[in-house]
Amino acid sequence: MVQKELLLIKFGFLVIFVFSFGCSQPKDNKIVNVFEKVNCEQIPNDTIFQNKSTLKLRNGIYYLNSKPYSGFIKNLYQNNILKSIGSYFQGKQHGIIKTFFSNGNLESLRNYRNGIGYGQHLGYWKNGKKKFDFIYFNDKREGIQKQWYESGNKYYELTFTDDRENGMQKAWRENGKIYINYEVKNGVRYGLQKSALCYTLKNEQIK
Image (cartoon, rainbow, N blue to C red; front, top):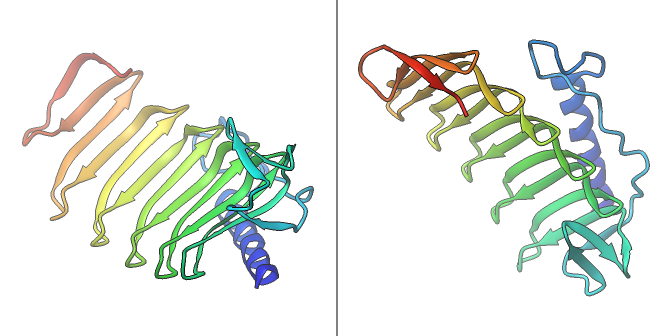
């Protein structure tokens, strides 16, 4: 079972980065959704349970027998259903970390490089519908960040550059009515923001 889960993780990792990100374009590309593939070849196929007495978490780093742990860490619910599994290198999150609901449905899939958010982060509601689709570059939001209501309706689409709003920002009520629709240029917002009318926010700087 463990070997099967490891193969599924590695396959999911390959699919995400081949089809979503690629391997060649730089960060300053205006469509910021392409990242260099995280190299996980140095991670051994060893897997241990998170509740192992000799596994300790200190300052965000996992230690096994007082040494930074490299391998996979697995956590189960009380009924032995998989709760989470992820890859670590030198004690830090590196590669894909998956979490699951108690019903077995995927809850989240997040990518890391040396303990830092890097690449696509996906989240799902318990009913299996997508909850969020975020992009990070070195732990900072980049490109279009999307979120959905549990019903499956859109909640928002926000655009970021270097963790700052930049470009179109949109949000909808669950009934589909848009209530945020503005653009950010040079730190200034232009457009609809929690209002029934479209207007320009003069001299308002984005922090």
